[in-house]
Amino acid sequence: MQADFRSDTVTRPTQAMMQAMMQAPLGDDVLGDDPSVKLLEAYVSDLFGMEDALFCPSGTMTNQIAIKAHTQPGDELICSHLAHIYNYEGGGIAANSGVQARCGGDDLGRLTADDVKALIQPSGNVHLAATRLISVENTANKGGGSCMGLPMLEAIGQVAKSHNLAYHLDGARLFNALVRDKEDPKSYGQCFDSISLCLSKGLGAPVGSLLLGSKTFIQSGQRIRKRMGGGMRQSGLLAAAGLYALENHVEQLAEDHAKAQLIDQWLSECSWVSERKPCETNMVIFKVIDSHQASDIQERLASSGIHIVAMDSQWLRFVTHMDINDAHMAHLDKALKSL
Ligand SMILES: Cc1ncc(COP(=O)(O)O)c(C=O)c1O
Image (cartoon, protein in one colour):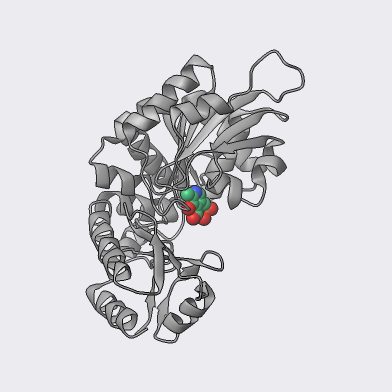
């Protein structure tokens, strides 16, 4: 048996999702007339109570468009030292926007309002870059799927307002946080100037992310998306998969979280595991004892058909998702016991 715990991006579209794709009315989204893309953008804007939305190929693109639209070259943005935009987007902050990052926060990828205040550059000093944007990530990937929670996010929002800074959310896995904390998407819509959401992580769609914001922000986003080569033609096929995912696959995220809890519990009983990040959603990040190598554990599990990611020489990651079933879990339990 093969069980793929590397990421929640490995899911395959279900038959019902493919049916929805086949039945989607199509147009040309670069010409602005693909009805299925329009439907998805309207659905998500409405869900979050934001003015407009833009369908893009990836979460990297929605984040990078947001950064570019909020800043000017030479500006500075504030984010966690673990943020995806800072670590895993190919240096895009600098390459696409000519912006530098000032990082802080804890080892779960979270920032507090006080962290942010301390990272804002004082204005009026020509030696310093101008802080223009605060970007947070919820849930935080490299933080082990940790959640910041609305009060923490709203407190940062107050700081952003009082310093006249733009506030962006990398919500690649925001639905995991919403389901866990039973929060209302509209509260997030009120909190942020822009939100990036991914449909291809956990929700089971094959491709696609959305950027949310005001009408004028999304208008400038459209131009940046075109320039980056992200204008797609009959993308209603993909939008239909995304809409199906939003209508049918959000609630099941709670099952992924329960499976991650179980893995966390099994790892707590393994003598070769020295540390685990708090398991809050669908990820379990853990460290092996000094005498072991992460790559060794990864290879031994792979030889039993269980695939996970080694994050460095000591840390590894399990991610649960909708294609992990009870048989995969039982197989993993057995493999961990015999390792
Ligand atoms: C938190 C976070 N943001 C953004 C992205 C980028 O998404 P994509 O792979 O669609 O570019 C990822 C991808 O894993 C992610 O985990």
